[in-house]
Image (cartoon, rainbow, N blue to C red; front, top):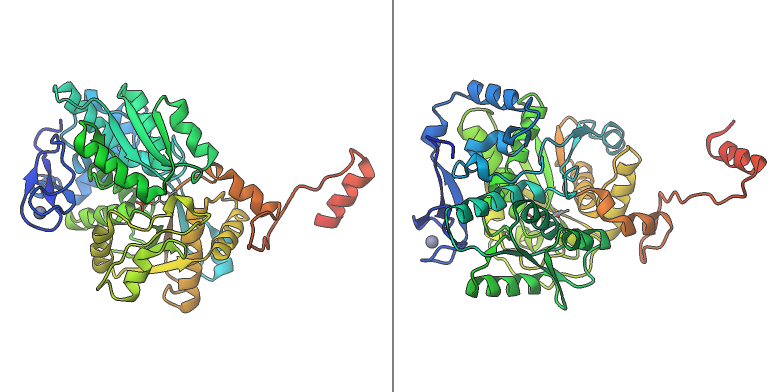
Length: 444
Ligand SMILES: *Cc1c(COP(=O)(O)O)cnc(C)c1O
Ligand SMILES: [Zn+2]
């Protein structure tokens, strides 16, 4: 517990309903809207912006303990309700912000920075939220609450993160996965971490419906991002970005969106820094979707006046293959307050963007490809200016999507032209053959 600080759940639709963070509640009991975590801002404002910056900088030096985490070094901003003994951490956060100079030059926007959120224990940004949610569950169990297990539906990364943090905490975990729609690398993570792994004949949206039904009737705690505790951890990405830019605010942040929790988390982080005076302006936000699963994009085209769920179609960006995003209205609110835009990318566009960024030394996942391709489109249209500083949120490590990478380079992605394929050159183990290949590629 961080004495002197307080946070609680509050109805997102604004009907003043509040709940304690240790209550098992995901939606407003009066109007069924999602909840959000609110903080005692007056208590937070007792420290000056300079004091917060100095405190965060000092904690970054920690070699062990909660402050060695890029989430818990902002404990007061995230979840003051959790006691130190119940913090479940795997050293999340503190990921690199890489200036992708070559990529930026090629697309005519030199200041492109990529936030590598996939350089994390389970390989995606989902760790940032799960450390908070699982810590809160551990806190509740320590206080005698009856929470026998935690469950989630997942497009692969949420389940990997939940399983890892639950294993650390010794809390039983159940994951609901769409069979055949996640990568083997993602599937093996909850399996290895001892979770009850349910592979169901359904798409993600089907798994989501089922897990809500099960957790609604059984005493199992729901870990999907409709549970706003996760959002509190994910919002620390915005703080890290500003820290890494020397407390400068980027002009644009581009982020891939599926269930749309992360785009609202990003917004909350910037709003909190702005409210407490650590930054003096807000960036614009672009949420990037696949053309195969683009319900937010379709709504954006109608000025967000209407939203219609859709059946998501197959996409290489499997982690955002979602047709009925649970956090749709949170995302819309965020985009409205950040001069937000929504862009979409086709399969060819995402594959091209990944290949181009990888030649700059990155190793991008297909979701990051959707964001990079959307950035390219915005730059071409002039919506993003040449001298704008852009941060792209890379949501997962490319190693979680090995089939996508190999299929691209071996030319096996159906319907996609592998313009930058670079398959290995197979040769006899022979001096002349090897030198011949080197001369052909590099000259000599
Ligand atoms: C979960 C996930 C997303 C989408 O995040 P949302 O909060 O669902 O919009 C994007 N990319 C990757 C790799 C993910 O795991
Ligand atoms: Zn309400």
